[in-house]
Structures are given as structure tokens and as C-alpha cells.
Image (tube, rainbow, N blue to C red; front, top):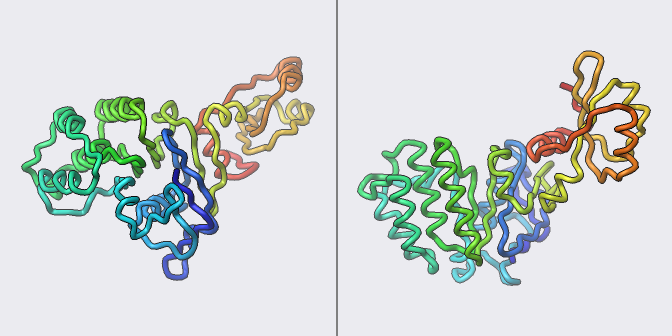
Length: 289
């Protein structure tokens, strides 16, 4: 288990993360969500000891991760912009074999065949999509107990993204690994996530199991007067206006009697997708489109 306690990070005078507290349990696929610039990449860098925090702790099984080779070898960070190296892929993967004690050679061979990677080529000469596939191969083959993927599908076509998700699920189902995935393509990977963490305003806004989260997000469509008459007690997270009608989105439990009132009023309601719920939660209340 990774524990992040009272974490702060600044770049110069700009504070990026402020009092972040988060627990990452073993054997889960977790979505790390947040708007651009909210600090997701910075947080992943700090967890993997690639950046120095200003304050706070990052612990793995109760021990500091920073400057602890036994702990850092259990965490693989796979960046969105590649590895920034001029090495040939063979050299890059040889480095991975040395770095990660649980390297899975069989899975590695499957991945390079699946993605058609030529290990004789230099990483810097690859297309964006091929660089991404190289990084994903490193991440999955690492066998790392905690693998952190930062925007893992950039530059990849739909077929290769599908193959990657299949491999990720297959590896996860074997047990012993946790995947923390930062992404903006939420709907495409929502069915993979057991849990999501949402960052907002430099902090962890929400950490919740996906089924629970989806049960609490819903929208209702009707006239302003009809919606006002229902007197919802759930948190209002967004409003979309279409002529004389509105779609109001809410976050909170919707008990049976509330559903009955909605039906008796002749109004339409539906559950929100994870992506729509994320948008509303991070935009704030009463956002009008």
C-alpha cells in the first residue's frame, strides 16, 4: 500500500499540490482524473521519486519511498511524453530488465510482437504512437507492483488502444499489481476502473469506488418550474439549458421515494456517465452551457 500524507509541491512561487492525502491500495486499477494543469503528472512523478516534494511523506508499506532502491523498484512510472532518450529500444528495454526485479520477459515478447516494435530503432526516431507503445510495453513488462501510466493512449489508434487495455486487464487479473492510470479519455477506460481519484484545487477532491460513484450521479430534464417543484436535496453540480427546458445534474443518493416523485411529475432522469460526472464535479455548481 502507498500512503501519501500532507504532500505539498511548488515550482518557484507556484504551488501545484497542497496538503494531498491519498491511500493507494494493492490489487486495484485506479483512475487518476483532473483538469489540465491540476497536478496529476506532478503527483505521479513524486510517487515514483522522480520529483522532490516540498513537504509531506510518500510511504510504501510504511517506509519512505525516496532514496530507497528496494521501494522504488516496485514502482514504475510511464510518462506521457516518453523517456526522452536517444537509446535504441534494445538498450532501453535492457535498462528496464535491470531496473525492475519482476520483469516479465514472456509478456515483453508478446508486447513487442503485438505492437510491431523494432528494437533496433532509436526511441527518438519513432512516431508518437510508436513511442507510446514502447512506453506501455515497458510499463506492463516491468512487473512492477505499482505501475503509474500517464495518458497511456496518446497517439495510438483505436485498435492498439484496445489491445493495450486487454493486456492490462489480463496482467491485472493474475494478481499482485496495482495500476494507477491518469487519463482524459475517461469514457473509453471507465469500465476498467475499480476506483477513481479526482484532483481539484491542488488537492484530492474525491476518492471513491466507481459503482458507488455512478449510483450517486444523475440528471433530470424538465422545465425550470417542474424541477424547482421536486426540491432535490442532493448536491446540484450542473445545469444545461435548452430553450424552455433544463437538464439539472445532481450528486448524491437517489432514494426510491425521490424516484417516485420524479416519475409522478412525468420527468425524465438518467444516470450520469463517469466522464459527464467528472466534468460537472470539476466545473462547480450551476455551470450553464
